[in-house]
Amino acid sequence: MQFGILGALEVRDGNDQLPLRSIKQRSLLAMLLCHRGTVAGSDALVDALWGTDAGEAGAGRLRLQIHRLRQTLGAGVPITHESTGYLMRLPGDAVDAWRFEALVRRGRRALGAKDLAKGSDLLRAGLDNWRGPALSGLHDIPLLRLHATRLEEERLAALADRVDADLRLRRHAGLIGELTVLVREYPLQERFRGQLMIALYATGRQAEALEVYQDGRRILSSELGLEPSPELRRLQLAILSSDPALVVAPASGHGHARRGRCHHRRDRRTNCPVCARRSGTDGHGLAG
View 1 (cartoon, rainbow, N blue to C red):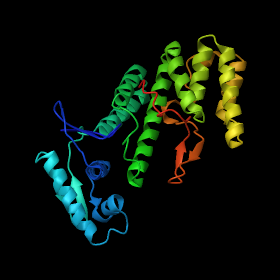
View 2: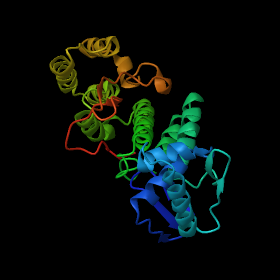
View 3: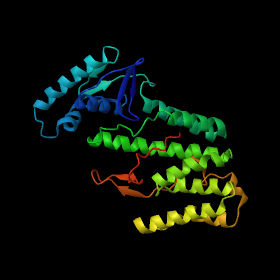
View 4: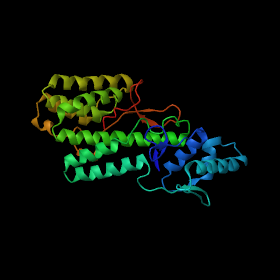
């Protein structure tokens, strides 16, 4: 049985998708999956599903939902009751987010070993697990919203690492369209902006590369009252001086180990930082 959280929650048994009709059942399953082999505390599950005023009835409601979830999933997916909560035991490849994270780790190891093509391919394979915004439709629960935010940050970092590898492989022309979309969706994410500047410069479009910098500077100034980072300013100067090293250098200047600067707005519902993107997009230039 396979579980998907990199998009709307889904459960597949072979080619069949199992129905999870109740929002409580979907939310409970998602929280168990997000705990990944660790116990999900009963009190935390009750608070998330029914609120802190559920009282003594909350424990009974939780047991009923666990029973229904076990019936839906069948005996092949054990959900065990532990002293403080519930534990769902699954193989390491049973959840798309786990496969994504494993492939990203392998891809970064390949990049560290200077195998750029293999690293790019592994990162792309990891990103291919994404179907849309993580845990879509379940963000009313703070725990799931925070987990979705973390997964999205991991996706963006993996995507930027893959682009860095492709820049070093001189795949500049093929990256311009993808990076243009990413810069439009994430105008405050400087790493994508720098990567687009390099791709444009390397294909002979120096003036456009400099305009991408100026656009970013205007956005930062008007929305946050900030100037571009020292790294992005150095990149602008290198383009102005026609530095030939830019044709092969990653936008971060330090390869896959550097995530680059993302200026954050804050989620008004949680007061958590979120990497800002333009409204009207789902945050997915999923050309992983």
